Amino acid sequence: MKTLGERSKERRKIINLTQLQLSKKVGVSSVTISQWESGDTSPKGENLYKLAQALQCSPDWLMFGDSKNTKKPESNAEWAGGFDLWDNDSPLGEDEVEIPFYMDVELSAGEGIAEGVEYKGPKLRFAKSSLKRQGVNTDHAACVKVNGNSMEPVLPHGSTVGVDTSATEIVDGKMYAINHDGMMRVKMLYKLPGGGLRLRSYNTDEWPDEHINNEQLKNIKVIGKVFWYSVLL
Image 1 (cartoon, helix red, strand yellow):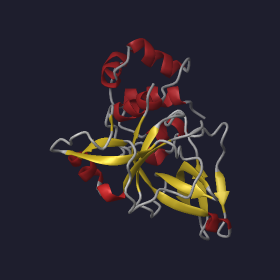
Image 2 (cartoon, rainbow, N blue to C red; image 1 turned 90 degrees about the vertical axis):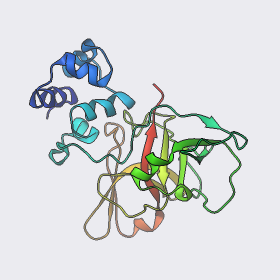
Image 3 (cartoon, helix red, strand yellow; image 1 turned 60 degrees about the vertical axis):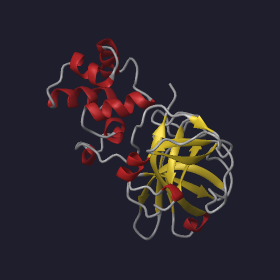
Image 4 (cartoon, rainbow, N blue to C red; image 1 turned 90 degrees about the horizontal axis):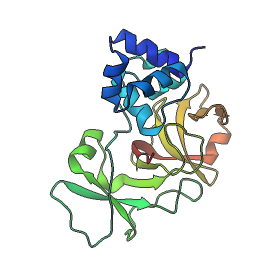
């Protein structure tokens, strides 16, 4: 089975890029690209996402080698760069909207994200145009923190994800926030024959796939699809 570095090198050659050209697209040095391809180090977080964009493939394909992901993906988590934390008294710009940031939820416990309730805590600001491109209604959007290492290297501990709570219909391979028997988690979801569900983590070495049968499915509630994420490196 090929490694992430081998797949990265393979894609780079297919699209006729040198290590130097690829490094400029990703925003790292050519030495770093060489280290990734040799397996000395691995891209994480934002760098993994940027590498996938530059290679016109998905992070899933780089990590797992799924052949259906060799085309340029339609991202379900647009990288929007840095963000700012604001309180209720800060004026909004013309193209800005505020989304609640549930810092204490950390996708680890609780009953989900409450909608229709006035939120007075910290908020993140997004461009209306960015949300429109993703088809996200502000009234159904919230940001929360990811807890743990199960989604590394794409979502390291402490990452922030944006969740569209109106998008609960499962599309295979997309990331979702779920309430799993009282524990909130972010996983890639896949529908199984007979009404079951497969939960996949990026960190498959420590977190193997979980197979949920039809009976166990009653303990899972899909909170919403992840439409954005941000990683502090």
